[in-house]
Image 1 (tube, rainbow, N blue to C red):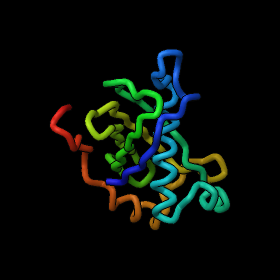
Image 2 (cartoon, rainbow, N blue to C red):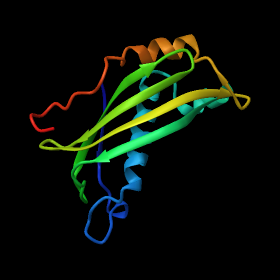
Image 3 (cartoon, rainbow, N blue to C red):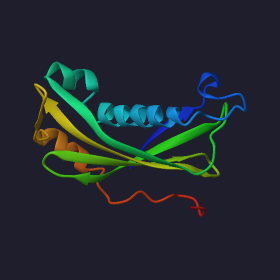
Length: 140
C-alpha cells in the first residue's frame, strides 16, 4: 500500500472549516500522481511519450469531515488491473479516524485511443495489487 501525507489548507474549507467535498477528488489525484511518480512514471514523462492516464469513474464515501489544519494520509492500493484498465482504492484517515473511502478507474490513451497498459507500468502497478484496502484502525 502506498501512503501520501497531507494537511488541510484553509482555502479548501467552507465557513465551518470543513473540507468541501470536491477537494477529496483533488486529494485522490495528488496521491495517485505521487504513487506514479514514486514508480518512475510521473505524468510529465508519460505525456512526453504521448500517453494520457484518463479517469473513467470516481466515487467517494464521506464518513467523517476533514477540517482545517488536520493532517491526514491517503492510502492507495490497486484494486483492479487488467490489460486495458486499472482501479485504485483509497482510504483517507487521520491518526484516530477513517474519514473517507474512495475508488477511481482509469485507462491509458495514446492518440485519443485506448491502448494496452505498457508492460513496465503494469508490472510496477502490480506490486500495489493486494485486494481491497483495509482500515488500519479498529473503527470502520
